[in-house]
Length: 142
Image (tube, rainbow, N blue to C red; front, side):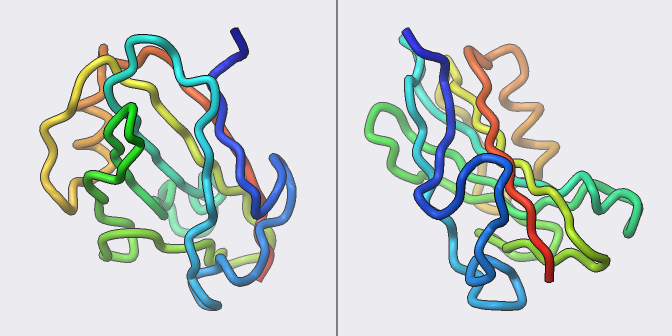
């Protein structure tokens, strides 16, 4: 069986994320596809963040937190971004090109989270329940 992965029909792994997905542009959510989901998966967590923000703002900036039911893959809840908003907050690098990481987590349980949860709350809830991890990266230049 192939490895658990995330792909997007909007950009390829390691490539530039189109402007319309940028926070200060159209702030559209890119389409993500989870492939080769492992047996035993009951839910999927997603974290999109910008580790390059550490140098500019002193922290890894959280852009998107999602939690899905499996096998339906219906969105259940979204968390709060570092923009202070629930839902997607697209790339908005303060200084030049940044790399954005979309991390998917196949989980062996259904999580008990409330809408607007933080990255820390999601990570704590997922702890010891991760069956597999997947990653997709994209870059963005304002």
